[in-house]
Image (cartoon, rainbow, N blue to C red; front, side, top):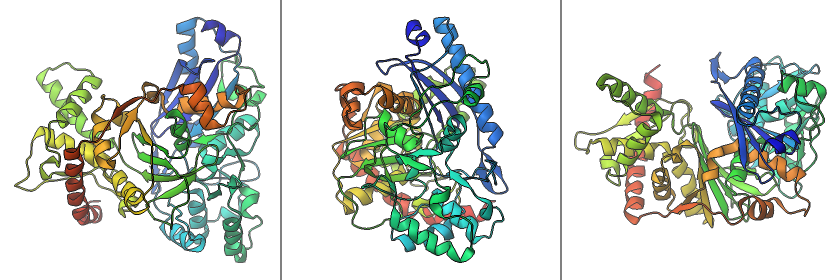
Length: 528
């Protein structure tokens, strides 16, 4: 591997996740050979979730420096150049810049739910579901609220697009990430012309000096040229000065797209579920849905195929909080167990719980959950005096609760739209304990769930694969064929099929879950 790195044949992928920035270096066979990371957290500032610009760049530099240390420790060499680089990040949100490329207001992340009026009006205008977190919702909400910065907007992009732009000088975006700004037309693989025109007409009375296409990044398909690392970009990424400019970059993508790539789920009739701090499912459609549904977002794969996305703001945070309580209890008892062992113990005991959790219900809403109709969140655990309150049912209820909203959205696809799926791949922390998370999700979706060992590499590996696709595809394969034939080569992972009793139990659980949503709503109103 030292020769691969020293000869500049390695490929780098970096993804800005919600709690971690991760870098993965891969070899010519697309296998990870080194990695680096940086931990960060969003901040609630003036009622909006954000990361500062300083945190973005400090985090990126620290992540790359950690990768560089990892390479030095393993191989005793420096990274001087690379075959390609790719950047990805949390999708959606709002990053608006003026003509000097200075950010006008703090970055507004996907987690914010203050855009309800804008999203509702745009959904009616377009006859298309426009989620709260999409860039167009944030932009129009700023217009509705008369924010002073709007007339000065020169550039509007996502986090991945911003980092790519600053390192290459190219104001572009991968089509998958672009589809989280305003809907993309799968036929043209760029912003939907009808909706762009409707939006421009809607805001025309405001008299801004820009139209929508003036401020949006150019949309690029997977494999297209997205520029090269500039000298300034190289110095910004690697403060040690070893990395040379001129390295090609693939189109920047969102974490949804890189998750699809990392699980080989970009072909029609395939899907994947990413379950970590947040969760989302992506089902690649054969045809458009019959009508808009508020819980279902329509985005695209990195090569432009239409995808039905169910995005949930919350997933494992509440599980993590409860595991922290058990960790404290262990310390009181003087019990020594690693974090992975503790999670494994608690996840495995959940398998012994009743299929319906004994009547117990858990809501994992650290923040608002639009799919469930809640603009604010409060973690909540509910049980009646007659429920079977055991440790197994307690943990199973939390595992069910982590994917409860995901089930609400996917029931629309499978039961109302009769969407066909050949395989669904799972990845993320929810699946770390072998087969337990798969079993719970299989019960929720009544579908087989597969997990690959490589899926644990996540989106950083996915964007590295997209970078490899851009420079190492002499046969000109399509992205689905490239993943099938070159990257995964027949590997379909380990499958867990739904057990009938689990499916029936989850269905009983979700009926209790839906019936008790008014309690969760009241909790958000009462507890400040």
